[in-house]
Image (cartoon, rainbow, N blue to C red; front, side, top):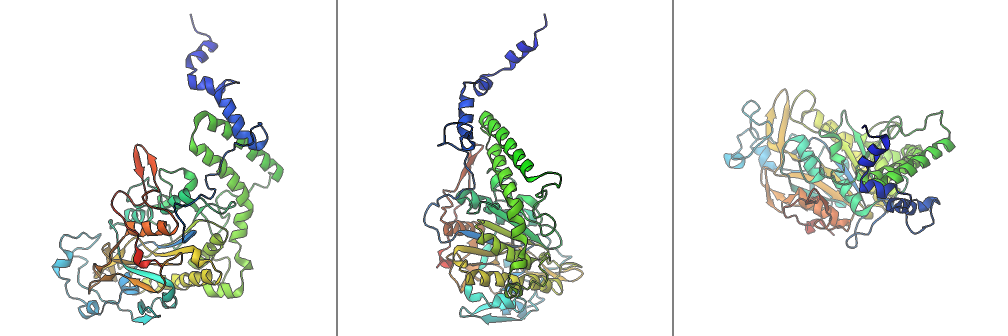
Length: 486
């Protein structure tokens, strides 16, 4: 005898289904509580919380926001920040084997040579700190007494995509949360109308590694970075179709929210909570995002400070101004990627022509951001980071033109605001700039220090997934770099 449809249903019904679907069951009671805020139940004390609501820090913080200016490709510290007269004096000679023995490089072999390459650019000391800055960065030279320059950064990975991941997520493996995701997970956001973590890009292409660089990894996706575009809709599909009226859209959002609430009760899946908040955030951003992107109301003096000639242009300078506008509105973490810093020597990326052009693209705006934040009283609460995934070698690469190889043992990053010690040059490298001889700073140390200034203990900021406790600084020891803190 063939079973009836009702018998099939009974056979497939599980205890979980029974409890969630029974009209007097646990699931319906929980659903009524969750929906109380919409007037659908009589339990006003319970509601769905916003995962981006501001959260208390582990201890009193020195900073509230972060702007990370990421020079994707690896800027040459030896042509921008590290003045090495001995490197110039020995230009063209082989580097002593003691420096390179046992080391690995991305492209260094006999076809590209490995002789020392002195910088062709002039250096001078600036500010009370006496920091050496290349002629390629005249505007950065003007803010040396506002920034802390770390010349002894060290990373573990020497190829672009893994190294970018390592600098952003503390690991070269896919699936780890980025620093922006960790910060918004730990602190939430103080802006209700924009994402807590925003990403903008400039340059001819996106950074190698793509969206995983600002991903949320094992954290809920509500903490991942949201890219803002400089043309069209600030966020893809943000605008409402002309055929949909505002009341119709509100009804649709409410209906989807109630369906998602019901599903949330049935499954307990955090991603559904993320989806609920994403719909509400998208609805609010239809007003807030276009207002943010319209910089036409900025004063001419501000536009001139950043070097913006056209308010509709797509540029690093405009992104820097938008970054200031974002932190003004309470966005927790802003990351700007600028590409084409991979100067190996070639037809598109070399030291002779293209490095000066890239430096010109970012120099004025980077310095303007620090100045603008300071004059508005925002710098003391905002950490500004400038740097890439690694540096470049003291040895030259001779291809169609001149360049340098990837280098992980010593490169330069600078930090400003947020309780960092202004007017500081931290660390010292050897006569060629190959490695640190004093105060080496590992990427994990930098991460621990950034979190510390935000009031977060890097060892306590963890999430458990698949039986493991993940954290930004990994499992190896990391230290807060007190020498660069005020």
